[in-house]
Amino acid sequence: MDAIEMLTNDHKKVRELFKAFKGGGGITGLLRRTVGEVTGVERRKVAEQVCTELEVHTLIEEEIFYPAVRALADRELLKQVNEALKEHSRVKKEVASLRELHDDVDSLEQRMSQLEEDVEHHATEEEDEMFPRLEEVMPDDERRELARRMHALRMHALKERAAASASAGASGAPGGERVASR
Image (tube, rainbow, N blue to C red; front, side, top):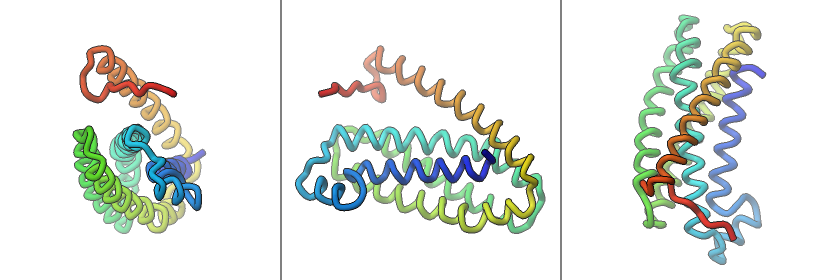
């Protein structure tokens, strides 16, 4: 797997999570939303997953992927990276705002909708503009090596988040809420 494939898979995963927040895709999701079968607890859990995925995704892009793209010194890619970093800044603020919400379901839905719109814009630009250009100027083996490094950072970041969440849950601090299973 190369870096482009890895990031595209991330985009797909987050898109699926946004669908899950709405109760699923297609007719089933529409029906679940219409009859109110998507619970607040369910939405909060998915929103938390979206936040974690986006935090890790932006981390690996900013720490490994974008510096490697910048090192190519391609004018088109440099412009795209600068634009992507501005979009990351907005998404990070939205994620922080979502993490502060606890019981306001209406606000959660509005903020998730705005986040989905911003993330979709960002992902589409990368997939339609940055990634095709990158395939032209970065060798396959270099993209595979980037993916290896990005994967290692992802695993490290997820491990840290899991430990922090477990610690917060044990102390009763926000962010460590436990959801009882049915």
